[in-house]
Length: 420
Image (cartoon, rainbow, N blue to C red; front, side):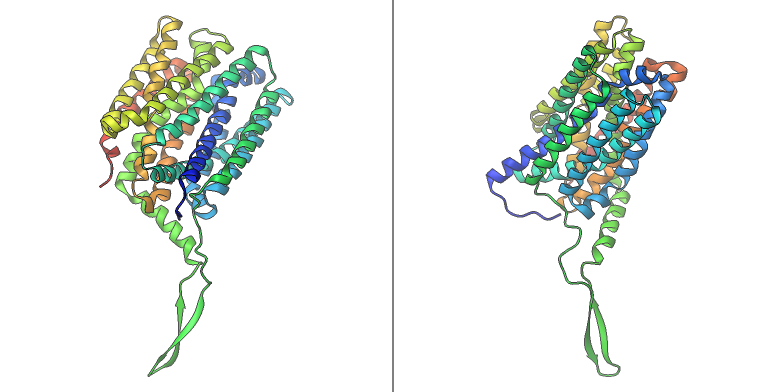
């Protein structure tokens, strides 16, 4: 990754543009999540078939995030983010069309798969871009960038709750959201500055010669641009062998699963487990993301005062407490209060993990891609698997499986300590 000297004004524009990309990603995610009850009802799906539908998005996402390191190193973060946002916009419109017009689960599955393909690499590239901004400003701003993502989810959840209450067809809602997402991100990307240069602008291999007294002229191959793809693969392979990077990924895994499970299942859990309306279910998810946003914007101050390790321990503990209260709440009001605690607990897992992975700027892109792959794998793969578990124990009790993984995150908190 190459950086050039920039003015304070350019850094400000850069920071705002990256924050907008995070916010747009949150808006895209919560737009379709908030309409999941309507999608479920429109397609007459069971919890198990909802889980299978989500697996289609997971398949696209996991394929994309697994290759995200090479994609970002090859295309650069700007092009990756722009391309991803356009794919997400198309996928949102396709998922809405499949629900409202075709009433076809395969059509919705295709739309979700396209969303997954676009989102995963987009988010990895955003984390690389965000880490570069953080280094440029010299402060812990990654939590606030992820807070922008949460602001986007708050806005998306609020619009989703309104759309559900007003009876707006899923297609028109998701198509409008997709247009806003793609348009805003492609415009903001002009200010991005952390592009990875996949190939040095060197001349291709050129045979030079030198004279050997005994054998005569001998060709000498001077490495040039063609070495870069091999170097990129080597960087990714080395990151996957780095012990701290892998442990950071596992730490993020638990908190990412707590966040992803809330995104996919809170609205349905409130509707089916706590007997709330679809609109109230969407509003409950809004509470979760609101308090996650509060946690992320407060995260800079908290991290500066207490450090990464204590904060990660408290986050894991709060997530366990909030999740347990949500599952066993005897009254709906307590379930809504539990969502606030759960949201605070899940708020800082991703931003702290990404910052820790990017401690070494020279290896940031590769290591961020590894932690992103593990974290997003949990974020994306876990919720659909919970749907299959919900077929046997119910939606609410299936969420208890997340608690065991959060205990592992608590125990691995020390790996977030800043690398020396």
